[in-house]
Length: 409
Image (cartoon, rainbow, N blue to C red; front, top):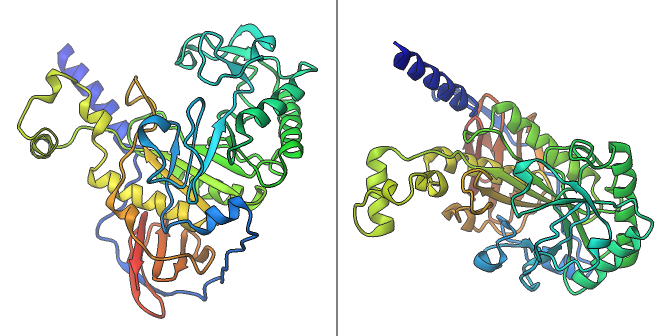
């Protein structure tokens, strides 16, 4: 009886986790609708370095979070690292990660000489934050810190396109033994203002804001990294997906130019069906083997091509390309999928579609249904409960509920 109860319990937990993923009905009726006149767009190019790179953007623009040494810049329009940074190219913006709120005193990830002066004795975060060893709080209220961090940015990123602050939020600091939200807000403002004044307007300051809608430093920073963590290995709920659209739009509206919005959503992590597992094993290893003998979590780490993942990768990519002017996408692993690394991902075939340059801004048809015209086609996303057949001048495009479509004309 106890075994049965345990089985029922785990089945219940599993169903709750799976229920978190946004589900839609397959047999919904199709509503026909005429596309409104698109909001015309012509990219401005001042001729400076950042505008020139943005003018070379592809139809779908990927970014790489860290992993400089193994992923490079070939497939990406934006990327960053702490120690090793890919040199800037005509199509790639390269940023240096700068630590400001915490430091790793036993490591040399960032080569931030002088940070020891500001390191506190209190540990930053819980066990999950000790990913790279001992992590200490930093006293960014120290009277010498502002000049230190500004000159550090100049010396460490003066030959790059900009910097990223991995944590750029007001909350959590008091929980981690740091400062109050009001103090953090005050010094984030001072830090971003000082760096902007030192480095000039043609320099990227990008912050990881996660799920937050906050604009208290947006007059100085011009990019956000939306690392949209989730608690489970299942997908995002329908509500969360709508929230993500709203968050993207918020930052695109309030950031300083060029308003870079890097959207990092996490995959659905699960094993493939048994019959699919055999097919994939042969494709990857050239023969049938028992993968679980050498890595019981191999598929959790590496299976990113399920129909659900392809579908949501297309939806989030469409949202990241349509909503902001300069959006980037990373549909990648959950941070807990692999204890050895984060942010690995698939380069899906649909990323390579070429619709030319955008000729419109985001144009909304109804709430949750929007498109962006391109020279050779259109990108559409639909986060409504309805299926729509959209009638454009050149073509009718079917986009189902919670789906992203990339259609050539």
